[in-house]
Structure formats: C-alpha cells, structure tokens
Image (tube, rainbow, N blue to C red; front, side, top):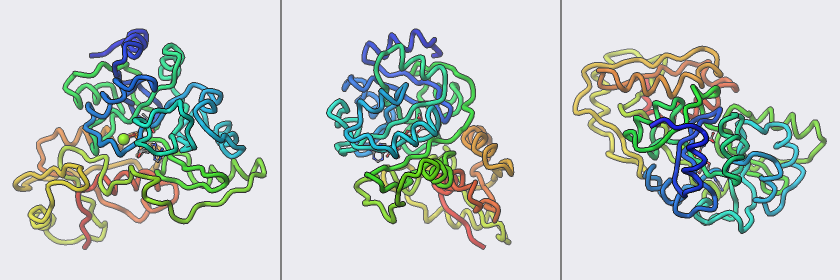
Length: 329
Ligand code: TXA
Ligand code: MG
C-alpha cells in the first residue's frame, strides 16, 4: 500500500516499519529507539541478526551525537559527500542499540540525498535505521512497486519515484586515520582521496579488514528470482547445454542465501546494460526484476573487458554477487 510522508511519520512513531525512498535504493525504516520496529526489520527481510543496519541521519550534528570519536576525516567526508551515497562506519555511542549494530562497537551512518527521506527523519525527530527494502540476499528495490511486490503488499511504502543512483551507498570503515571500503558505490576511492587531500588530512587505506568488522560481505547478494549466469565475453559453444550442466552442481543455498534453480533451462534472456556505468547502475536492479518476471528459465550477462574499468567497480561488484555462477570459455 502506498502512503504519504505524513502517514509514514505516524506509523514510525507507533513503532512500526515503513519503506521510504532514498537516492540509492528504497529502505525499510524503523526508529532507532524502537527495538520492536528494529526487530520487525530483521523479521520482514528474513535478515540474519549478524548483519548490521545503516542509520540514516538528517545532518552532521545528528551523526556526531551517535559517534563516540568524531574525527576530522569523518567531518571532511561528511561535508564533501553528505547528503549523498556514502555510509561511514564509525565508533558508536550508547544511543545506538546493539540490535542495529549486531553487537559491534561501530555504527554505519549516512545522510541520504532525498527530500522525502530527510522530511521523514525530520518529522519523526529521530534517526532511522534502514537496510534496503528487499528479502535478504535478493535484488534491492529502486521503485515503490518493487517494495510492494517483494513483500506481497504487506509493507506500507512512500512512493518517491525511481531512485536516481540505483545501487546502494559506498560503505567506508573509518578507524582513526585508517580507512577501508567495505562496499563500493558511487562515491569512489579516488573521490574520497581527493576530498581528504584537499583538506591536507593524513590517511591510510587499510590493507585487509578483519572479517568480524565487516559481517555483511556474503558471496552472493542482490540475486534475482531466476538464476543469472555471468558469461565470459569469449565464451563459444552451446550455452544452453553448458548451463544445464552447471545447474546440476548448484547448491540450494550459500551462506543462508537461497539459490534459485529451475529443473531445466530451455530458454534464456540476456541482461543488457548501458555502456555508461552511472546509467547501468540506474538500470541494474529494475532490469533484473523485469527480466526475472519474463517467461525464460534463466538470465545471462556478458562480462566485457570495459566492465573492469575503475568507474564500473560498484556495478561490477553487484553483478558478480548477483550471478549464480560465472561461465568461462
Ligand atoms: O544505500 C544504502 O546504503 C541503502 C539505503 C536504504 O540507504 N541501505 C543499504 O542497507 O544498502 P543494507 O543493510 O542493505 O546494507 C548495509 C551494509 C551491509 O552490508 C552491512 O553489513 C554494512 O552495510 N554495515 C552496516 N553497519 C555496519 C557496521 N557497523 N560495520 C560493518 N558493516 C556495516
Ligand atoms: Mg541490502
């Protein structure tokens, strides 16, 4: 059911969840002070409790109140990229419930660049925890209608139109002057470096992050409801025969994420994306959902050399995780 921003504010105040638009993807929101609504997020998404939620704030001041040691790097990045698609993982204060952070000492903070999201945070008078509004491991929603079909019309959603960016925010872990990208997004490594250097701030990219500090990095994610096969652009031969061969070796699930498998693959549909990485990001999830609703048994995507360019890092990561299997020649 579609609702207004005013109705969303009332529902959130009553300790329930609603889906809200952001510039990246739609989020399933709850007040950070409501353990009841926070639990409802995990239940609705069938999300394991080990995977922490992002907290959405309306301002730098609201972020500072949730962070134990706000430092000049955080201030610089917030000033450079907020409101916008950057989540900073920072040390948390006691105001942030362990339910949000899965017991970690850090919290992911982001100020979204969407008037409706900001109005709702303002109206509720409190930051909102919001993961992407999809079932765990599946394709994220970039339209209100995606949220409606994902949850069989059981979750109220504020329609803010199509998401302008189309893939989730960059997640950056900030530990003192050590920084590390946990999830690539439209804010790139280069953009972060340029912003910090402009302010003459010293920083180091962390070589490897302890897995415990980044629990959300599953092998598969963003998966459509039909198998998607990544195909090497050099592949030659009988593709359908090869896919059926692969099908028999696929597991039912990987790290709790369900692998969709037809009994047989008779027909396939190719996912085609723009040559522009920005445009491809906008198309990706919508196209995956649209094609998965078609009559074909499986989807394919041909990985080209151009998809390894720096501006494709985020879309490439989403596609790689959305793929059931990569087929080499
Ligand atoms: O663009 C976005 O970030 C969207 C919109 C709705 O804002 N939200 C989103 O949330 O993508 P979600 O929950 O689907 O992804 C959040 C990611 C997860 O991989 C999670 O593990 C990671 O951020 N994360 C959140 N808090 C963290 C923390 N304290 N430490 C490490 N990773 C964290
Ligand atoms: Mg998600």
